[in-house]
Image (cartoon, rainbow, N blue to C red; front, side):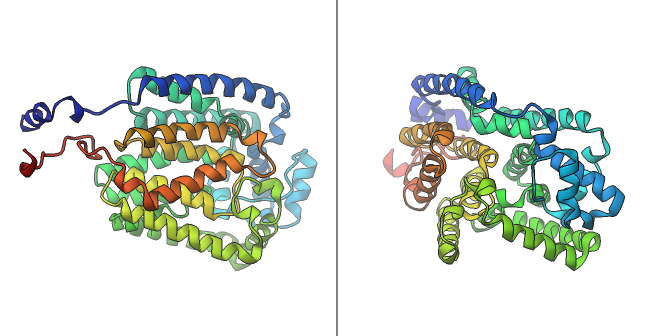
Length: 394
């Protein structure tokens, strides 16, 4: 009752302001153009399951079943891939991801498992959109159209890449964090280590943003995961996997969409330190807001930090944008977030150096450090409730 009186006192400006209709129209146009481009690009994709990431993991599951998990990190794995006709030459998933896959999709036939995995990844994306995107039905539909039209989203669904499951996992983390169920949120965040490079800084940004319980629960989950990995493959397996990562770090075929992949190795440590500092400073300056802001900055910082990042992983940038738009920013910030769709749409036209993505990424990290703290709507707080008016201004 008191809240409604405050709304009447502040007037119409106190209500949550949806993005202008022009933004929604631009999203639809972007989505339609991008969809046509994705259809043209997808015509070059091999129409066989054995060329997908899912097939890579499935062959690994078959090999682990016959010879043990350690065999996946030896020369026998590329030989098994070759016999099956899979084009991948290196196994880039960590041991705990292999264990999880082997106990689930790895027990199914490859076609059944592939279709189920792809369907669940799409459901994960739809769940994130349904819970995170605000606005009218028209505006929400515009976001969905623009998202599904992105080239990397279609590519990710075709590959059945496991990063798609992180849409649902991160959304659940946000949902729990908003409700102050921090310990459970930290445990769910641990499951995002299916592809750890995508979220490696999220726990740190939540920590400096004032949510230490989430970070502690995540750290405990990581410790348990480490013990399970050591028991499964031993120190030798861990060392072999590190060696494989070292080989991948110089292969632009896998990691060409990573900022660090285009920085000389001798200068990479300095660049990574700068990314970590910028990400944590931004999270600290925006502390106390909706936890989705800290999570979004963690996603963007992780993408800039890791050298192991490819085009299908970039779909998480849209998830970060949805999380940022949970906060009521001034109009220019919302417009800039929506324009980020265009940067992602141009990726395939800007290779081998995907400058639109790097520009978008660095712009948002820079704004978090210097610009965004002053860009909040002055009459509405981040939870979507009306702030009390200043008595001195009354």
